[in-house]
Image (cartoon, rainbow, N blue to C red; front, side):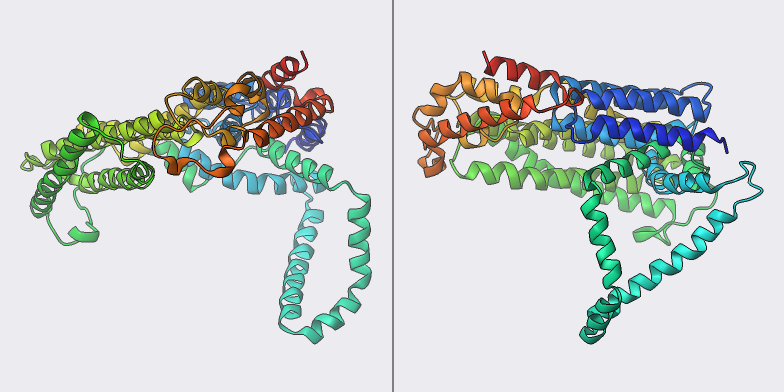
Length: 500
């Protein structure tokens, strides 16, 4: 173990604390992650970065860049996920699957802090003397077990709890003194810094997950002996093929009728029926998506093992393709449902997110088709779908959604329902957009459809204007108190527009 590893972890923790203590997410994200990645590449001694690791690395920095530009919550979540799986992609040279990387990162983030603590106690970096850390483990575990049982016994016996509280009074005083004199926020920030820094500095060791992910082939190989599970445990390929053919014929006929009804009443001759639209979109969309995902699962169940090489099942493959195609038709119906909803009720985050989710489902169907046609393994499907979903997540970051939603909804106020109370809950960067559309906030409610959508508190123009002025005042005051570490372009632009 290199003696500079704990020093590098400590240095990164200090940098992290300086950039994030008492600050919001902004330019500090891209600054810290750039230093973190460069330092990690130096210590893990990667000669080259593979294509998949390169995609995740670029995605991490791109999402960090859009945090600096927009400060959006979507970009923050995407960046957190991206940074989390990047730790594994940098540790394992040939890792290809984001799903496996996520599982490996869970192990990495658990083990790395212990590697860091261990390195602090190692006297000989060659590993000849590690007694201090060994004693540390021997003493700590029994203490934790004793504390756990003391806690359980005190809950179960009130008299014991009372006696114990007297014995532990000095300890309670020490704990109170500790939290009175220690900055708890700084403590949490430093703890988070150690966790992240150690996960990127200490290279992970090989385990079963990493070996399976790296060595798993993309192309299926025919097996001479296969143990079939679930419904077909004792069936041969012929019986399994016949059963699958029968089921797929029935399912194709079954899905045909709801698709036909959707094409007629949603695609072609759609009419809005008022309150029914919300249930039509929310409940109906969820059920249809679950049905589509379950359909893909059934397809993958049939096309496993040697049935991919069964030459006599000539009707099975076309039936599967027809089944996938009809699921695409159902997916288009879900998209149209969402479009109809937006036409009447304007944009919202979940309505936009649904489009991206449906895009990921379309790609899953496409890769399922390619898996069956080209006799690919399940690992191929997990890898390709996972990486394409990750790229879709990165694309979510490139738009400032709050500003886009606010601008769109005001522009369509005369055509769709303007939920003014909800618009006032959007992030601070939308305040200039809200301020520029005061006449719509202060004017009469604009309802497109039955009056049951109009709620008393959603038409209080005076209350809306008061809320807007309070939010503007609070934002200006808060922005002036921020450090340079919290800077992002969107908030800076909003601040300067409001103080003009």
